[in-house]
Length: 502
Image (cartoon, rainbow, N blue to C red; front, side, top):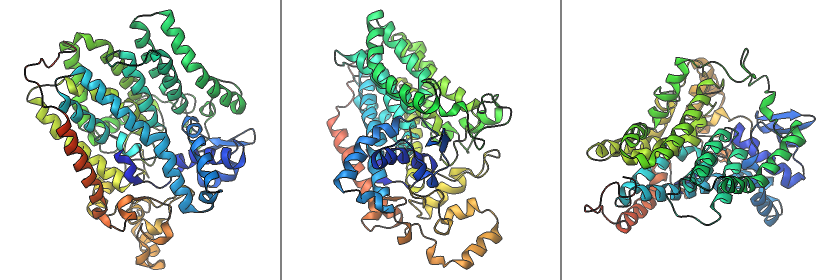
């Protein structure tokens, strides 16, 4: 729940998802035309404006917004501050809490694999959920982190390594269908996890229960697509808008992979998964190690490798692989738990390296979450700006935390109040000097009262400025970490490292 400390501003994708929630609750319609001014991720289909996204996160958020809107007699929707706080609560409900729930299941899974090493399980869990994009993305109203949480819990249940309820297959079906409704790329992942569940025994009976669990969610999703796009299998991406479609691309969206994109999304400083989370290198190495040394885990490793491969393949062929304004390869987020867990299979002195990689990864993700997970992107083809080198680290060292000044109710950020954003979005020095001459330098501060409703954190809300605003978070994490270490027993040397999986 560390992500709950941060209240992020708006951008096209979160705004569009929140627009659908508002349209249903406040207007009794799925048509977001009244809110189309605040996002470029809304499209028009047959006279109806809808998010250019899978609807799951919005549908899950509707009940909470209905309660909040009714409780305050609509007061939250009448101010930018109220909308920002409402979007924050919706984000907690649909994204941050599900990711925290998945972290618990991740820890349980690690404990099942290494029952004699609870502290190692806790460390791998912390690195996986605080040292990867799961951390910053879980603070935004997007679908990637939610899909990661749903798919991961379904996967753990399907492995049979953790004790679960008798209606396990029904729950797995619900979780996988929900993941598809949140992110369409979860469809092949759901197929892989479903196959894993069926192959553990039970055959047709298990397949039936999976289908029964998934059916209500898939029926609702199919109705949405049929009603607005003409068929249950048709989605908004069937006819992408010109702004998103690429010339010569298959379906307007998919192109042949290139070494440039492979580099940018793996080890490059622009969107590199392993650049921003070097801890995941240990996870990749754990696959090979686990396959050789832990045969009982091969089914779980095979499905995890499939999930990782699917998401890398999507990244390398999708013409929007860069993800727009973001701090990393956000489309890869649903695969992160599946790439991370094999790091637990590394033993001996190599674990010291994992600790170092995990510490670096957690520091980088804290910087991204504290400054701005929605880092500006002005030239994806050139791979610039590089979010860490050009923006996040310098801004963090300068104390520019909560640096996003676009609210959930605005289409574009106000560059007058965005010190680092001005330098990146307006690279021309003369244009920047003209803007600074026309506006008082005192305005160049994301904490200006005029920016109410944009990004902040609970330390800033308490009146603590700059990097000092993270002190309460550090204190809470330190106390909880110390309590956790005391609660977990030290490794039992007399027990085998692989007592459950050897």
